[in-house]
Image (cartoon, rainbow, N blue to C red):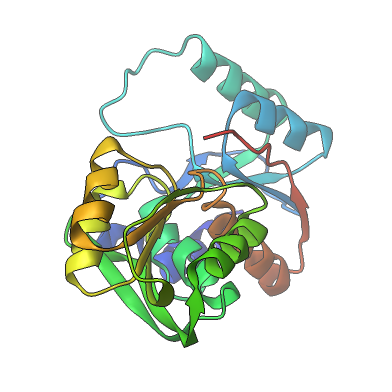
Length: 249
């Protein structure tokens, strides 16, 4: 397990991020790892599913330890820790480093799967670029792009309309990043894709001339943790499983 954790530290470089999450090995379990289960959020339900799958390691985007949280082990925290400790499972979690990575990150993977070209890093947060940007080879009708995103995330999306009738340039920041919509508009993008909406984003779309699509916090963040797990599976010859449970937000 230590070799896997060290490899991830070198790959994702969490020390370079000012993050609310404690990135890396959050809970130590058994030394030998053969089965890895991935999930966006290490909830009690997902951890119980991982235990049922007999996973040795759970790889999560949202771990269980965050800076500034209460140190008390009660309620949901007790349930999560109890599952991990009783089943001797490791918990590995990466938050901003897994948004930002330009190969395995949520935004890089979404940009690639949407067929964007000239892809690049975009979107500053706490001094680091965490998103991605690119363009369609040819401008595409708005409705067609909306349907393309819905197919990608497997759910309906909230579309705040305000941009041109055809979309070419796209900026992406997964999760809860609606506050970055104004930056996207002023950088000349036709569409800003994120997870959660905000009331203010409605007016940014209308007044700044940009389409904003909120495709779900969970739905836009399955890509990175799944890619990381699959990468670890290939590198260390591990069996990869999903213990993810989709959420409505």
